[in-house]
Structure formats: C-alpha cells, structure tokens
Length: 112
Image (cartoon, rainbow, N blue to C red; front, side, top):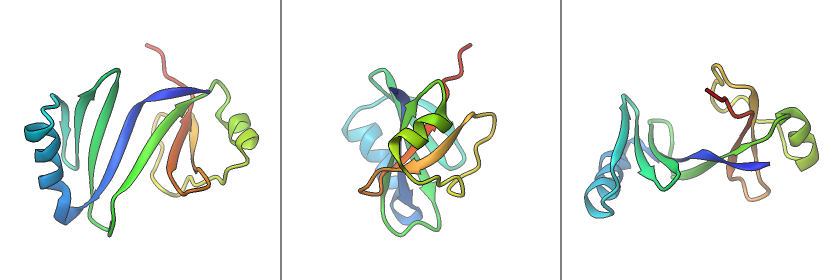
C-alpha cells in the first residue's frame, strides 16, 4: 500500500466558502482546480480538496491509499466496505474506514 495523491476535507455547506478562503488567502495555497462543489489546492505532492457537502453536519477528513489489488487490501486491513459513501466512477477500488472512522479511498492507481 502507498499513500495516494488526494486528501479531502468534507465541509458543511455553511462553512465551505470560509474554509476555501482560509486555505487560499491565509495559508496561501495555490488553487489547482475548481469544480462546482470542490476546490483543489496544491499540497506538496498531493491535492487537498475542500468539498462542499450540503447534508454534512460536521467536517470529515478523507484520505486515499493506492494498492495494486484493492479488494485483497481491503481484506488484509479487515476494514468495512463502505462503497455507499460516494459513487466510484472510472476507479477500481473501494471506500472503507479506519477504526476511528476516517474514510479511506483504497484504489488502484491509474497510470497515464
């Protein structure tokens, strides 16, 4: 298993704009990508995503791990499959979580 390239902070709707402004204006991170409900920042070799989640009541941090066989890795971890969290489009992998509840995207890295 290897660290992925993305970290996401899932932010309630009422905190999203000020959170994006904090990382952009106060921390000074460069915006690398803007989507309707997400802003990505350059964060070293990773991208830090600030995601607007209307149904969210608290902030969560989600991380990404790469493995050549995500299904076998999920079994090795003994972690629950949580694929209902978000659709995985064009991604080979699974959503899971650690014992503390941190959401993990365990997936095969797409090369190219």
